[in-house]
Amino acid sequence: MGRLRSTLDFFFFKFRGLVIFPVVLLFLALKDIQVAYWEINSICRTKSFYQVDTLA
Image (cartoon, rainbow, N blue to C red):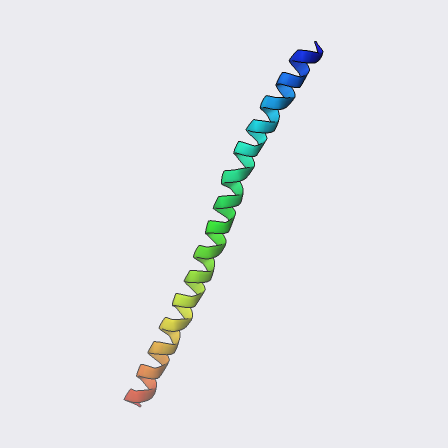
């Protein structure tokens, strides 16, 4: 019984690691995408602002 329990704990630990790893990666990727989106958005805003400024 103790051996089975340790085996289950081992598999649960491995499985938990396999689940947490992609979730963390996905979270970091989403953060990077959000930062990149904000940077692109601000660049586009400043560009259009400058274009309007030069037209006026």
